[in-house]
Amino acid sequence: MKRRREEEEEEEEEDNSIDDGDDNASLTNDVDDGKNAEDPSGIDDDIDDNKPKEKKKKKVRKLKVSATEDFNAKLQKRGIVYISRVPPRMTPSKVKTLLSDFGTVTRVYLVEEDKTVRKKRRKAGGSGGKRYTEGWVEFESKKKAKEAAEALNMNRMTNHKGSIHYDDFWNIKFLKGFKWSHLTEKVAYERRVREQKLRIEMMEVRRENAAYIAQVEAGKKLDHIEERLRKRQDKQGGSSAAGNKDAAQETKRRKIKQKKPVQGDEKEGVSLFI
Image (cartoon, rainbow, N blue to C red):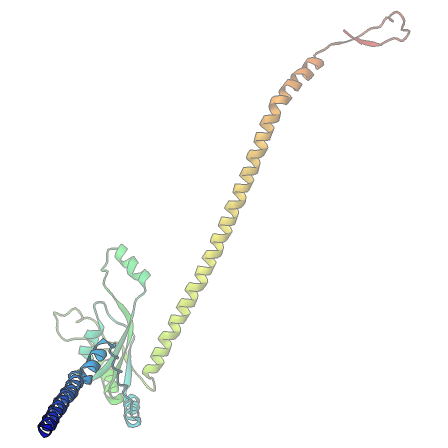
C-alpha cells in the first residue's frame, strides 16, 4: 500500500512538472511573438515620414581651365563692324539676317533714338515706331567682318525694288582692335553719366522747390501779421473815434481877442474863451 501511494505521488509530481514546463514554453513563445510583432523597421518608416524632407543640393558645374581658354581664344578671333546710320524700320533681326550672308553673326547691338525725338515725331504726325541711330555687329571671325565691311560700304542694302530699304545705303566700317568689352564699358559709362545728370537735375529741382516753399511760408507769416495789425487798428479805431469827436468839438471853440481891458485886468489883448 505504501509503495502504491509513493508511486501515485511520484506520477502526480511528474505531471505537474510537465504542465509547468508547457506554461513556461507558452510564455516564452508569447514574448517571442511580441518581439517579432514589434517591427522596428515599421517604426522607423513612420518616423521618417514625419521628418521634413531635405532639399536636394544643386550640382555646381565647375568650368575647366581648358574650356575657358578655348572660349577666350574664340573671343580673340571675333571681329566687329560699325554701322554709322540705321535707316527707319530697320531692326536688329533684319541686320543680322542681311549680314549673315557673309559669315556667322554672334551679337548685334543697335542704339535707340532719344525719347524726346520720338515724342516730337509723334506730335508732328509721324510714325511712333522704334528707330535706331547707330549699331555694332560682331562676326565670328575678323576676316569675315572685314570682307563684309569692304563689300557693303556705300552699296544698297537690298536689290529688291519692292523693299522699303531699296534706296538705303550701307555706312559700315571694320573696327580694327575693337572688342565687345570696349562697347559694354562705353555703354555702362554713358549710363552712369546719364544717371548722374538726372541726379543733379533732381537736386536742383528739390532746391528750387524748397526755396519756393520757404517763400510761401514767409508770405503767409507776413499776411498773418498784417491781419493782426489790421484787427488791432480796427479795435483801437472805435475808441479813438469818440476821442476824436471831443477833440474836434474843442477845436471848434472860437477865440476872440479883446482890445479893451476887462475889469480887474490892466493888460490888453487878453484872449478869453467864450
